[in-house]
Length: 31
Image (cartoon, rainbow, N blue to C red; front, side, top):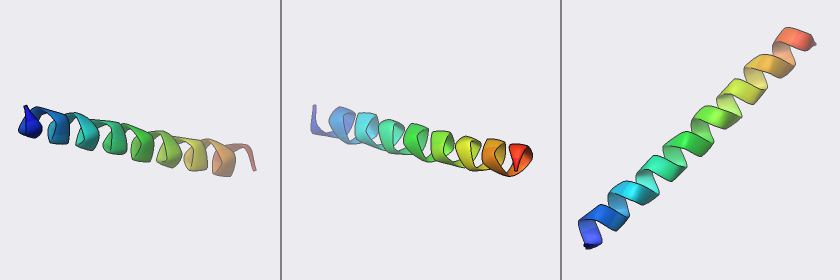
């Protein structure tokens, strides 16, 4: 179960990172 939790946490972190990257790209595009 621990491994599954770690994988889920990594997915959340990766998703957050991708979201931040996309936000920066959008800001630069609009800017």
